[in-house]
Amino acid sequence: MATGTEPPIQRGGVRTGTRAAIGAAHLRTDRWWLAPAGTAAGLLAFIVYSTWRAFANTDYYAAPYVSPFYSPCLAENCAPMRDGPNLEIIGSWWGLSPALIILVFPLGFRLTCYYYRKAYYRGFWASPPACAVAEPHKKYSGETRFPLILQNLHRYFFYAALLVAVILTYDTVLTFRDEHYAWGHMGLGSLVFLVNVALIWAYTLSCHSCRHIVGGRLKHFSKHPVRYRLWGWVGRLNARHMQLAWASLVSVGLADFYVYLLASGAFDDPRLF
Image 1 (cartoon, helix red, strand yellow):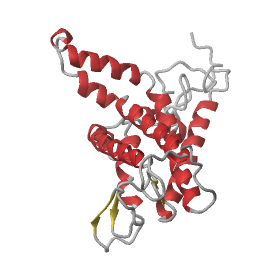
Image 2 (cartoon, rainbow, N blue to C red):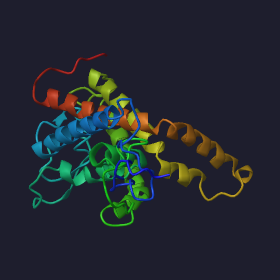
Image 3 (cartoon, one colour):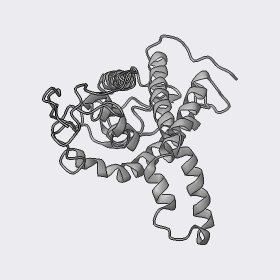
């Protein structure tokens, strides 16, 4: 029963006239803001670093290592890479960094990723900032309008991400050469690239689109035992999709930074054998 002393109903977001008249913005007493703040800080750090490296157009090749940000190098202004993925299919009219040509594909895959959507929706847009904490926006249209409707392209970016993973695997194989391109070499950079490509594959295959492609649209798993096994394996990876998303984000940044240090002359690649 109304007494006339209730606090005014807060409007905006999900707090509307049909909801209970609770004066507090939420009833959580823990530091719920740490998770979205940490997510925003981590993603912002990677955005700043990757933007700098993408536009730098320098120090991305130190034989036999090529930065994953610049591979495959498709423009004529790429650094010469003997036996490397230097395709040069784009003519001399391209005067910007060659990284800007290729990064659109892994970037599109990550931007439309189901986990990353949750991460940056909460971290940057507070939509919603946390469980049981109402978002400040008055309207919600979901992903039905531009530009968020482009999130539906995720399944297509997945195929591009598969191709990128194959190319990075090829790059990793090439790291088992010395500076004279003779096989039988293994440096610290080889291990860096091995860890990175393993995490890239794990993150890519743990994608929800991959899980649907492998086992979706099947009425009877018993009639498709191979696809069922693959679906189960991808499902186990999918359960770690968040961890793999962050681990692969860090590893690809570290792989690029390692190449940058070698190319800029900060130190020489330690040879393991």
